[in-house]
Length: 397
Image 1 (cartoon, one colour):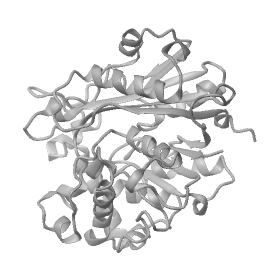
Image 2: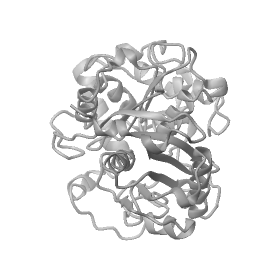
Image 3: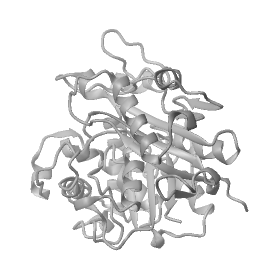
Image 4: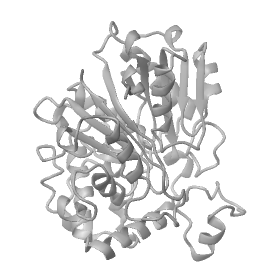
């Protein structure tokens, strides 16, 4: 089988300033990230003939959940596009990158600028964090599945994913002490990331001692709203050979969804959509979990990262708690280094794109204090939770 995505490569990455309540125009963050990625690849704006983003300009999520879409970026950068894509219905936050890989493989574009910007920290201000899908305040009329969940106080993913974690606890005996290693490991790695929001040391006792949010999640199980933009350049391999960087080849992608597309009615709440996306990815490569040098796995809530570890085969289904117990297996020197930049739990919620950015940083050997030892060659970036999931397997060849 010819795998089309192997004709795609990541050739450049960029980020804007990242911080809490930067109080900057969100489009300026997007433009900074995009220009940095274009320069990083050794390209110019005239070389960019495709744009892809998630969720675009039309999604009404929590305040600051999106900073604009394709047309705004095209206008701001004066781009001439042969292909573009943007919208909320895609395979997780990396779905826009996966779609870009398909576009360049099909010859629809040579160099696609993919971007994602959030400004939730400024938009939500100093008050309580809003639930995704409940709008920006005032009167709200629920629709879809939320008309059934809102009357019971289940207004956000903190409740929905907590339900999934509780099911995992019930079926497999997973404990909070085990789950806490995801957050403790993230904080340890964030200490080496100068852009991370929270870098001070955190022990398991610190984790267990903070307030609960939605059982079994405490405060440190939840990601940190920030302001920031991230961009990557997806290029066709034929147009990537003479650029500034050695291209990172896209070995395989996973975007499948076979279960019921529901936050609360999925056929197995302990696996979520990760199960299908991961299975598809492994079917499209001869590589195995044991070949992976670093894993950057979505941790909008700590349990999502655990579910990705299981789905990707780093341990068996239901064995995630035992696998991460003590933290040695997921440390930078461990079996599978996890979320080397601090993830969204400590570095900040860049909503999926931050994981792909960090995978590229590690493969290019630019992690500094947080760099994985041993010259990593193969990395996975994965994003999404609940009924959404997508993953990208990258190689240095």
